[in-house]
Length: 452
Image (cartoon, rainbow, N blue to C red; front, side):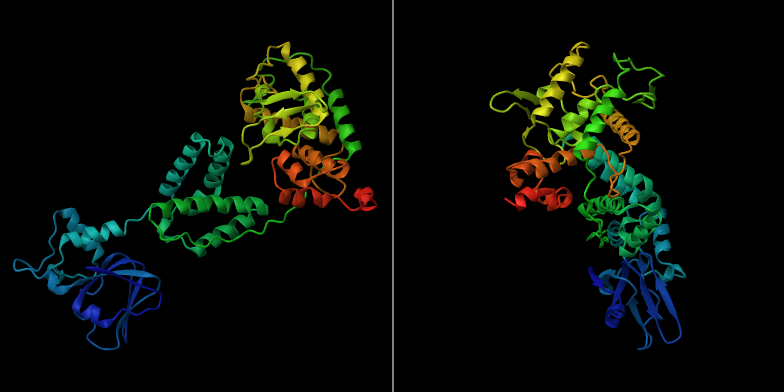
C-alpha cells in the first residue's frame, strides 16, 4: 500500500482506480461522470462499485487537499473467501459505516483488516478541547520551571477559555484553516477589543495550534492574521503634577496609624478594600518609583533582601531584583528613593515587617497579586481626586506612568544622559525608550542642549 497526496483540483489517475483499491484517508473527493456526481468526505473505499470507469468521461477530483491509500488488487486475492477479513462485529460495523456504497456482502472487496487499522490510525481526529487541555498543562509546567509567571499563565487561560474554546469547541484541530481563524478574528473585532487584546487572543490560539503541530496532528500552523498595533507613548506627569500627587497622597492617608487585621469589613473577594482613605505608604510608592525606574510588577516582588543602601560620593539604593518582563540586571536609584525606603522601614519595623524576606509594599498581604491590585486601585483614586487621570494630550495615566515619568525626567533634566546606560538601568532597551519615552520630549524641552 502507498499513500498519494492530491492537491485541490488535481485529478486522480484513471488507471489507479481501474487496477487498485482506493481508500480515502483525509480530505474530500468528488466523483464526476456525464450524468451524475458523488461526494466522498469520510474515510472509505471509493472505487468498489464495478460501474465506476465504465466510460472515459468519468473521473475523481479532490475539492480540497486529499490523501488516498492505493492498494493493488492482486495483493488481496484470497482462495478462501471474497469477503473482508474482520475480527469482530464492531470491526464489521466500522467497515460498513466507511463503505456506504456496498449493497451486499458479495460487493465487499477482499481487503485485510490491517489496512483498516492503518486507515483508522492515520485519520484519527483530535478535538480542539483535547489540544487545549495539553496546551494549558504545558503552560502550567512552564510556571513550575519559572519560565513564565503565574500571572502570564492566568492571562493565557483567560484568553483560551473566554473566546477560543467557545468558538472552536466543535472543531477538530486537523480541520482548522485560515478561513476559520479569520472568522474568529472578525468575531473578536465585533466585541470591540483593542488591537493589543486582539493580538493576545491570536497569540493564545497560536499556542494551541503549535501544540497540535508538536504532536504531528497537523503539518503546519495555518496563517494567522497580523494585528497592527499602534504604538502610543504612555502618560507621564510634569514636575508640578508629581508634587501634587505626592502631597495629596500624604493628606489622604493621615487617618491611618496602625495596620488593621483583615476582616469582613476590609476584605472582599480576597482583596483588601478601603473605601474612605488611601492606604498609608502610597506616598512612598510614588517617590520610590519615580526615583528607581521600576515597573509596577516589581512592586509586588521586591523584598528588603533585594536592596542595599550605598553611601559615598553618591547616596543611592542598589537593587538586585528577580527577573521581570524577561529583563535582569542591577538598578541604581536616585537619592529620593533612599528617603522613601528609610521611611517605610522605620514604619514597618514597629510591626516586625521589615525583615529581609518581607516585602517592601503592603507586606501584611501574602497574596501579592491582591497587593498590586490594591496599589493600582488606590493610585487610581488619587489620580481622580487630583483630576490627573488623563493628561493634557489625552493619554490615560496609571501606576505605570510613574516609571514613564522617572525615565522622562532623566531625558529632560539629566545633564549627561547616556541612553544605553539609562536603558540598562531601567531594564529596557534603547529602542523602547525611543518609542515610548523620548517621543514625548520635544526640542524646546531640551533647548539648553540645542543651544550648547
